[in-house]
Length: 344
Ligand SMILES: Nc1nc2c(ncn2[C@@H]2O[C@H](COP(=O)(O)OP(=O)(O)O)[C@@H](O)[C@H]2O)c(=O)[nH]1
Ligand SMILES: [Mg+2]
Ligand SMILES: [Zn+2]
Image 1 (cartoon, protein in one colour):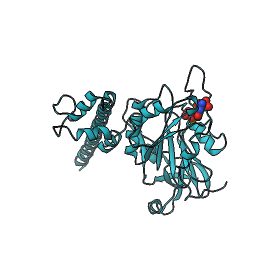
Image 2 (tube, rainbow, N blue to C red; image 1 turned 90 degrees about the horizontal axis):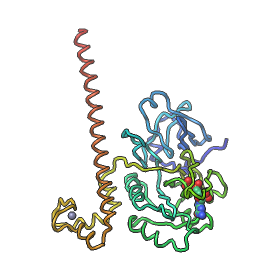
Image 3 (cartoon, rainbow, N blue to C red; image 1 turned 30 degrees about the vertical axis):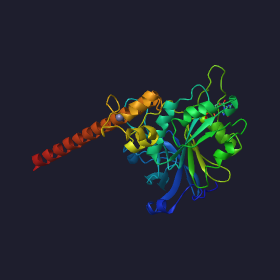
Image 4 (tube, protein in one colour; image 1 turned 90 degrees about the vertical axis):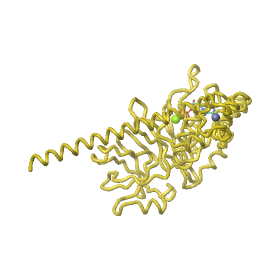
């Protein structure tokens, strides 16, 4: 089994400083149910968490740098960036989609299901992650004139580079590929069927990732990429292909991530008469005035409010969860100390 050049995988001095002596460094290249493919200088190994760390719920994601000992993952090294969402379902649990990513590419196909609201949601998550967002609009070959759709995206992705590509004709593919420099990692995220795996295969020059045939009636096909996987591009640079996300539930994000995504609203808000303007009814509200004049789309203001509410409710639920956890620990401690007094 040939080994990996860790520097090509993004290894650096800072990571080395954080590795406990005795552990073997490796990068998680794929996450399967309960098992990880880890790339090390000695080759690829299949590894898992020891029982105790699994019980602690240690979150290991594709892209993570880990320390291996006796073939098991003993430590996850500090992350440079992490794309985190709220795991699907009723509970509030963080799920890391990818770690140590430099560029997060939001992939959407040019067509009727291009959803500006979904792009905003992705952008909040990416700005929070520490990675840099870029937008990739695929299947340009199916449109005579995609520029109207591109303009729609431009209006919600302020200052974020937008790439219009076709994996069929090759349009824009090389320019996008060039953004993934040697030693850096990009992740492709987006709904299933938008062409993520097709694009990766084109860059690789062979069909490594499975893709779906689009059915006539089901424009976006069904997802076939079942796990998150790192791939090494010829000429250097790493790309993580991910299965389609049905929905992206936000995880905790700071005001900065929201502000970065809605810089236009933020800028307008600076001109409101009241410093604590809620932009709902106040006189002298610059945001409402902009909606009135058509300068700001009302859908965008609504979306900003909705995401703000979501973030608040996540923060609140986290608060409640932490307090419950504290109460549980406190109960345990008092029970223990009572037991000790009794035994004295
Ligand atoms: N016309 C056209 N079809 C594409 C393009 N890229 C992907 N497709 C098709 O879209 C379908 C889904 O692609 P896939 O790569 O599996 O999407 P993924 O789920 O995002 O990985 C497949 O049938 C592809 O052949 C493109 O640039 N142009
Ligand atoms: Mg795929
Ligand atoms: Zn206002």
